[in-house]
Length: 120
Length: 109
Image (cartoon, rainbow over all chains, first blue to last red; front, side, top):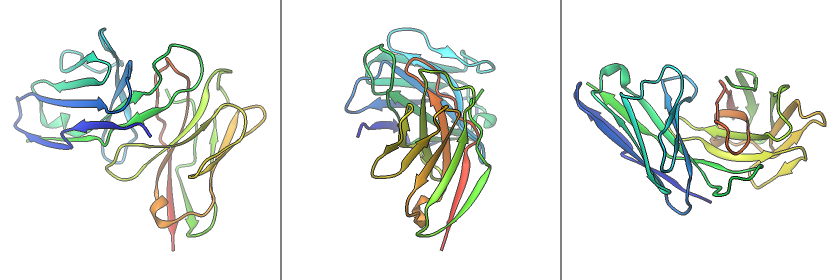
């Protein structure tokens, strides 16, 4: 099946620094990618929807200037956590839609392995 | 907000069938029912999806009621490796994919 790869799998950084997480669809083109954040013992929380070639759509309460999303190609979306603080420590997960057409109906969303961010 | 409700947790004996219910009474006509599972500290894994007919693949079966307001995921012979959080989601292409709380399935020997 389709594969979505995230990098890095885990990262530790100092407070105040910025961290970039990459999400790649390895064997398909993804016009839409979703970014999620997951805290311990909680469900995945949608942060933003990333569309290739356009600005991301952020969910309410998610700071777009803090969580910069770039979707420059059909196989790559990046999430940059700017000026990270300890409260940004979390598990970040991306997903990509394997459909390339805009028709109604089914599609499959494939998820990356996740990236664990720890801010000291 | 998630459009599904699931039991918080369930236990299942190893080797027995695990039946995980999901209510989605506000599902739209063009939305599909998807099931994913998440094993600790990993990304969600796709299991199965369907529109209105029952579906089966190598992992599981999906039974959708005729009115499409609920569904059941069936793992025919649960193993210890099936212990995970199972998410039932209604979604169609172009919409946001929103997760609910899911069901913690514990398979016990």
